[in-house]
Image (cartoon, rainbow, N blue to C red; front, side, top):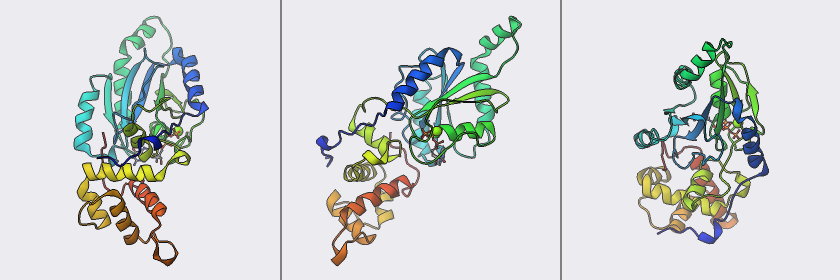
Length: 283
Ligand SMILES: Nc1nc2c(ncn2[C@@H]2O[C@H](COP(=O)(O)OP(=O)(O)OP(=O)(O)O)[C@@H](O)[C@H]2O)c(=O)[nH]1
Ligand SMILES: [Mg+2]
């Protein structure tokens, strides 16, 4: 049974710049050869864009943060996703093969188009690739890797990239970096909380109690031993009992030794966000 209060999870985060981004992408759609859609390897299904733009373009799905995921689970989902995309690849920071992989796949997909241009006697031009995905998934980081130097600002919070940016440093590609996009509405509370727990939703709108309940339940159901071992708890009782135990163990206390429950909620979220429970896949 879930402790989550359905009435409290009404948050939606859809700032104006997301709508603007979609509009701007539609305006330049004709210039784009290929879409690199990024999703988080820990939530490969939930973190995909439900796109109503760039629908006629060839797309490669690139799962980032593969270093943080539960590979056995994610690899199974990759096989499923291959039915929907031209190709699906996984990557991580420091992946030395990603550059050649993307180049080969893109050239292969665009072979006919490139040959047509050559046959018309047009000069060879770089492949124009747009990188899209939810906030904080690693779009700017990937572009920096592919360009071999820092050309785009990347930080661990959503909403770092604010506008479409053409980056022309790579010898083979012109990349367009784009601000993160989410759907107008989350389709379920699980979707909303999975995205929020992995830092794709602005922290300012989060209710840490709800988030802590969600994380507690996900770990209890999917990775119970890791949770128990990390907080040195013998077994699961219920959320309130267990969060109080954590609060006491971790010194989340107010004056007079009273449990600081809000601090404990925040601690659980931060431990989760900082990958303290090992490699996980929630989808
Ligand atoms: N562990 C790990 N961290 C990653 C990976 N890719 C990106 N990151 C981190 O994720 C955070 C967000 O990266 P960005 O490249 O800024 O993400 P973005 O999609 O451009 O984000 P917005 O512009 O805010 O939408 C940064 O702290 C990166 O270092 C990865 O493969 N593995
Ligand atoms: Mg960015």
